[in-house]
Image (tube, rainbow, N blue to C red; front, side):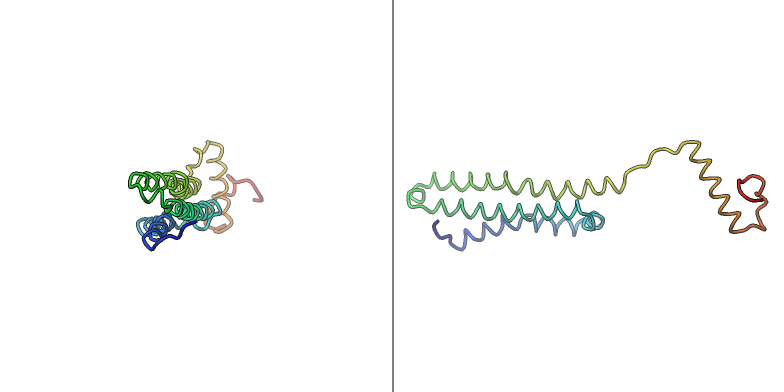
Length: 155
């Protein structure tokens, strides 16, 4: 593996840090989106996997850039351009896009679970709720509510 210069390591750092930067931007733009996510296993796992994918993408990009440092490839500007664009495209396709998808799908799934609309109440459940509420009111204020004949229980 050939040595990389400072410009190459800068590109590797940009690729590896892309999920971190996206996380901070997303957190700054929508903190209410992160609040329910980071406390759940699915949300935390999706962000952890996105971070790992970013680091793997950075390592893969470093390996590709090192392979492009061979004298035969350096002699041809066309091969250099093709290798750099092809390597960057492969890293973005294999690592960065899935990392971003994980960062967005995890919070979306968690929020969908938290904001799930309950089923419409049935007549029976409304009646049961009303009886429960009246029973609680009778126990809390027995001398004020003359509902003892309407409710089940001791009279």
